Image (tube, rainbow, N blue to C red; front, top):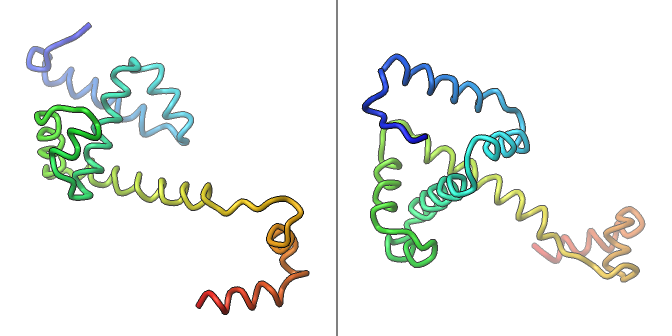
Length: 144
């Protein structure tokens, strides 16, 4: 059921939002947050929220409105609204996006490790680093 924020009493609004913020803050892991949002929001609402985060990312990367509009398929009004929220005093979007970027970078490093054919010389060097200490040392010195 959709409600109009203006028609909700201020004390009730504070109570409802406090319950939401406390519930989210009590979650410890990404999995818990994911399950909570799945139970709380429809798939469409989750996608819309995710798109807003991606729009904020692109704005912080100094992408133009037109580039964002073509990439994500959103209207200029949505981009302007997210840009206004980014410019706000609270800094919630910006902090969330910066944290997200750090997480994505660490994930990328973890998953983009070079994969070697099992049994190959490179695979053996990685699998048994002490046996190939001199080779590995020589390789590290050549990188510099």
